[in-house]
Image (cartoon, rainbow, N blue to C red):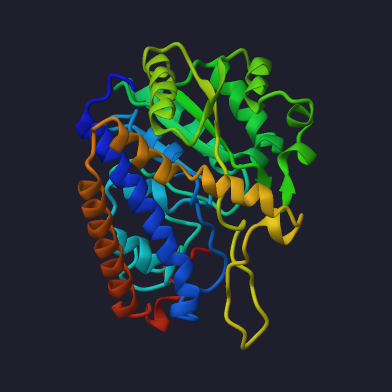
Length: 340
């Protein structure tokens, strides 16, 4: 596989399972607990290997910023899933006191600087964090995660340009999940339509660009680790395109009054009627794919994998129970943190 030891590989598998089970619990909440989640929620099932492989390549003190599809990153960094679930449920015991919800998580003490519901907004923020890290001179590296749709934003070009010019210690991780909401990436991006990887965009900014199978956490780790080492050495940024397939729809549907919110199936099916594409993606699901690899290579026995699964399900059920029991914020707290 790689130079990663067995303990690290099992760590990767456990965290991939934790992300998957957390996202499943969020999705099931719409049916099992109607009304507890309000507004938009976006899941990252299918991107677990990309998230875990990338975060396995950083060290204590490094920082990250992500998009609104953000639940998995703080889980890997050590944030309590109870606090994340309570935040998604809008509760007082949530990670941000119930003020942020699903799309606005942050845990700065663990290097998770935040997220945004605005496409591409985190890219210049990550670049600014990298500039601050460069000034501090303590060897910190920043990872900035964003989707394929964000590469059409001006913030993408501006940020990569200045990061290259100033050799900032940042790795731009472009998680290409095949869809810009309900539009296939090939219909949206001229590079993809021409059969080129989106990582070719790095050439315009005189930085390395590399595309990796985002369903393989070991390959993602090795690729991002090389980019992190380059950034930490002072050589500047890298653009990593991680190819994943989002296994849920872009987000939940906002229903009319009196009708519960819910998740549709997937754009491949709902919009394009392409069940074959969706079924093929599920057959290539990175979580069972990695489990099979670890079992085949003797890293993990089947009963050990089952035990990890049981532990993860218990952990995430506890997160749901905690969130449901947590009180809502007091009405008179509505104007806290609001300034004129």
